[in-house]
Length: 404
Image (tube, rainbow, N blue to C red; front, top):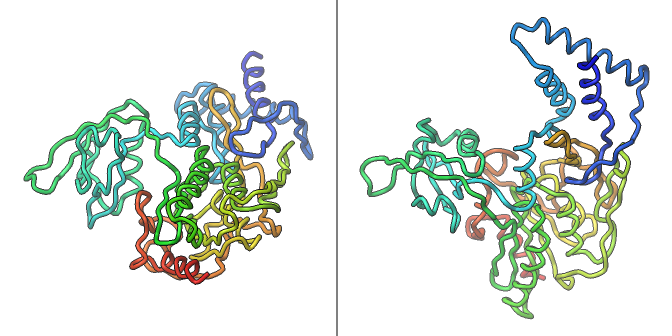
């Protein structure tokens, strides 16, 4: 009976969680769950029978906790975006949403068959350990790495704050490889970059976190002051932006819009249906906008793109966006969290862009990694400003704004 009650309680705790609306929002308790052909108690009985059978007959010993964790992860993982997060994963997600990351503080790239450090973040663990731009990483914790395996390299370099990782490094002018031990630390990497390009303000949004709206507002003010009354408009670069917090993208859209719908969400849970509307006041004063997108512009980046495109507030150029038109809620649960897909969102024109993406006003086909839609190298490294001489999308954006 004790086993059944404990298991039932765990299962009921999951079943009773309604779908919240925005990322990071806690669920409200007490929503009922409807079943077409059975009651909750019947489903719990079936679950307990399965648990007892597997625990008793599976070839390897499994505890009740392990079995329930497996069940919760299976129920939570209904799609590629939903998951059950343990305590450590939940804390990492919260830190990322705050704009903080545990890491080394390097950006790396494929260099032939090797992995080369492209830059180190100022005041980062990597800089403190003496790593430099141009260093080649031959191995991570004595495990060899290769250029085509950047996703594997990322996994090898990732880890908790305070944990050390050993890099085998080859440096130009140094005859032999050497070992460098780096202790992962907390990094605060701005999600917004800016530059004045003649009379045009350039704003790149790398991701959407809790600092993004503040960063965009500050960038608008800084660029208007720097360029002066002759400013011709802004380029908003969302290429390779994987998204982030829904609320952050809504706030940024509101910064560029004076009125109208930004986003409509629809979902089954209580409070999931919601419409976000712009408040009066365009922080740019109505200056022209050009938005740059590609096949890796996703989620919150598509919310901003869709709002500006549908209201004809911006000209969108590049390639079709990724097509993630669904919202995940992060619901604290059992020391960790459930990250669940809880709603679909619709652009101001009422369109769902899920699995179709947003078609730019001007499609500019590109060659190489950017045309693949996912994987490959970034169109412009996060810490860099594009060069119109070799970035045809950026060059077209400048010509549009200068013509106006």
